Length: 388
Image (cartoon, rainbow, N blue to C red; front, side, top):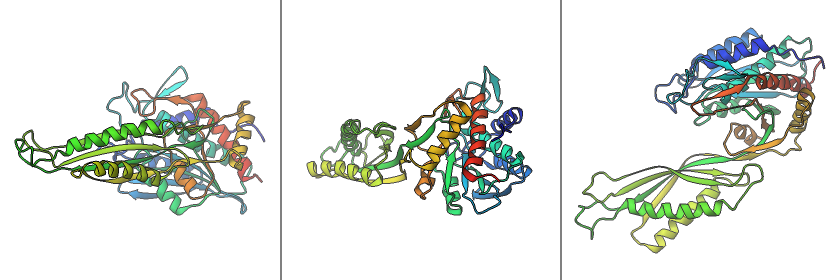
């Protein structure tokens, strides 16, 4: 294959333009800008490359953008996916939307998570378009909303398309992410009996009942720490939010606890249900006054792709060709949109640039890694889809 057509200057300019756009997720920060402006920018950019481009509003002001570079034959299809939303900025140490490059690092909200990867995807596609080689199969690039909250963007995307393979452009330090944890948000409610604070014989303290739940969950966490997955570590759970009571002189009749439970490959939602039901039924069997129920508010599964999948082997070979380095197959303790795609039966991995500061006060991406990631994706598109 000829040398890369990824242009460094235009890729850096694209990355800066993406970081300049406020796309804070409004499900995380009330009244935040959302993804509409960045979706419009990317739609214009994709159309300028000659891609068949569509903008779909997943929710009010929450669009996905999909661009398709159509192949010349009935070859395989490849999806390159990235999210456009970011977390909030109130606690950042610098102007979050004024990208600055220092010592090879570009700073700004979303630079690392994941506008650097998004810039790599688009720059790679631009380079493929500008080559004199046509692809056999379709190259599909998607910029989706809401990954930082409920991933409604990728959920909708996967209702509309079914590629043969997919790469998520999340930061992986140019390694190949093949496994990650899942998570569930669980609400537990204990029920007491409201009574005047002086009537201990009538009142049942729902907060005290929840204290017993917390003790049992802490014991459970100790057991989870002994169940380890080689790439992502062990399952975890923690108490996130607790609310209860109405006034000092009244026994609380209700207490609400919200917990987050991180699962590893091989576990699913039933794993969590079995553990919580065991805890609650055990407490009820020891005290007839104990009453509690629970609900799983949101659940996302863990995932693991075999290193022997063709996408893993092919991508590893391309990374070696471009960088001269053998990449590692890695796992991460956080959740990614990869699982939604993988759940549909599509071999999916994550691959992207390096940096630091996801969700932090200082966030940056290493500029050179963005360029390298783009060159890998450019070469992989030609390799996987076939060139004419």
